[in-house]
Image (cartoon, rainbow, N blue to C red; front, side):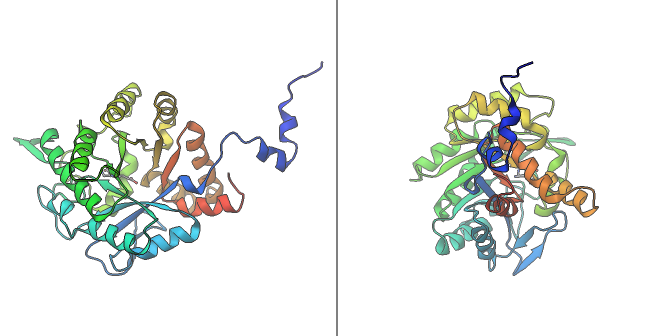
Length: 331
Ligand code: PBG
């Protein structure tokens, strides 16, 4: 029988296989998370995330230099403050850990993109992402009161020089409130990357250990999304888009590739995926046990996220992926 369409013609040589790739990766689409600890001088390895570090304000420039050397031009900052209280007041302090980190980085590397995570869980003594309202033994986060605090945090980050703020709190109405506050304070050009579809996930475990942000009571199911739901992610994205988000995000990435695909097809905004701490730690642990080839698994998982439709990726493997792209192992 005569086969007219023979796919294998396009698989004949390495060169043709490259020509035929549907998904292209670029170092420009990689964002590296950096943890800055206000109480630290120097660099300290993060136990729950092998290969990652906490940086003191005196050494945060090294994280940026490592990124630039690898070809990565964007970072997202997470802060560990010296002091925590019920309303997370260190989060919007003029000389808070993130504000100082942004100033330090921007003073030396003005063109390096600095995105800041806007949330309260690393700054509150109870570890929740907002202001707590207690009902007897129960508690929940007061959505509307939290919005006022988030606005203050975002404005303080923008004032320090952040290019983009990324609210990860999952409060309703957060993008509109942040946009209004940023504009009112003269930061019309500060973009908002909204953690739109953020699931209540066990994959955040190593991050919470690293950031000391696990809730001391209750959980985050009241404001983060239920992993059973897909259409709800579309509603969350639609709200953030209507409120003025510049970039939408789905998080985690690997277990939510269907959500990434659907959001990419439905919205005309750029879509970011966050390959979170648990995804990273699982690969590291499996590789350390000699069970998988770390380099290939790293490439294959990143590829799956872009193939699903993500336009950019926050990943702890950003530097290694950039090197793999340069070496032609992926891309
Ligand atoms: C803050 C925040 C979290 C992560 C990013 N921002 C933790 C959480 O929601 O508990 C997780 C990132 C990761 O696991 O790599 N709300």
